[in-house]
Length: 142
Image 1 (cartoon, rainbow, N blue to C red):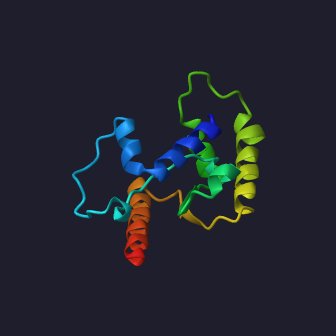
Image 2: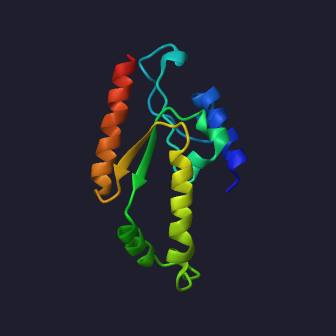
């Protein structure tokens, strides 16, 4: 992934979310009742497991979530996936998990305020937790 290009894209969105969406062919929902575009609320969700390890992006995050999954569950999920080129024997224990731990430790050493989510919960439970948290944050800003 080209992290520099992604950073530029995110910063372009931050400068003017409406213009950015239109220039990328994204249909916006019905116009807001807020007349002043500077007072409209726009939310950009950026997803990726190495985002919190890329220094140029750290200053753009308002809220950070990290879905944590224990070793056994992570290995079970990985082994259930079908890849075009299958994982060679020992890849998970010899590379995938150690790299996960390395990057997680780096992330934890950053200055970000990260909210950890239980990856053993259902997708719906995680969605509801994040949705409610974002709603509460927005209400506290008003």
